[in-house]
Image (cartoon, rainbow, N blue to C red; front, side):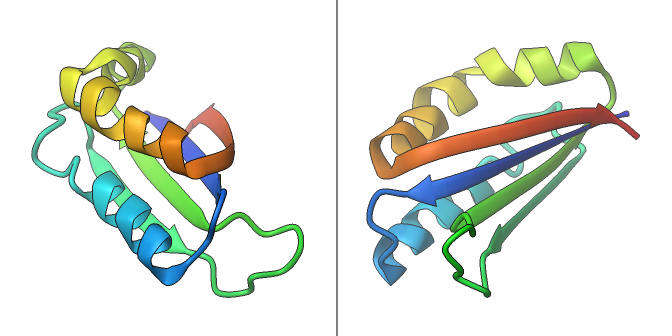
Length: 96
């Protein structure tokens, strides 16, 4: 099993932009079949080093994670919104 964690630092972390990014990430539920688990959280600390939104997902295999990256909904609908609204995006992937 593969865990995929992504942190998003928004260009403008207003309540509306945070909600937009959170809702777009959550919209993958049921649209991207290889997602075994999907969790999205909004930062509550809001410190200088904090990122604004976190995505936690799980996949059955590395191949499923790679297929997710190019899935039409993820690549065509979600990624453009993230790129338009984020100043920085970091990720970590590991076996669980």
